[in-house]
Image 1 (cartoon, rainbow, N blue to C red):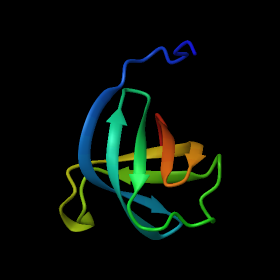
Image 2 (cartoon, one colour):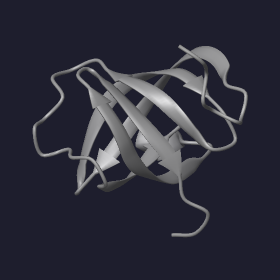
Image 3 (cartoon, one colour):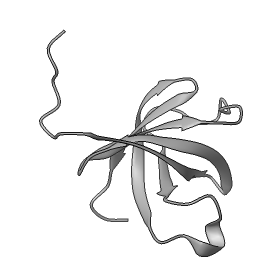
Length: 90
């Protein structure tokens, strides 16, 4: 199958948090690009996370010491993996 992405992804294995509707879910950042990221949720992915939902990706495993956060939209769910597209503005 031909790759349809027009932005190169960079593989990385890093702890992260997915913040959705006031809850935070621990995960592993699998890959990232300028447009989005793929996250594997390490605890059970709740059914409340749906395509099109907005959330935040925090680049840490402790929200009190996070160096950054990206506001995102859920564009793919294949539990336990979640595909995110970064939003330009919050």
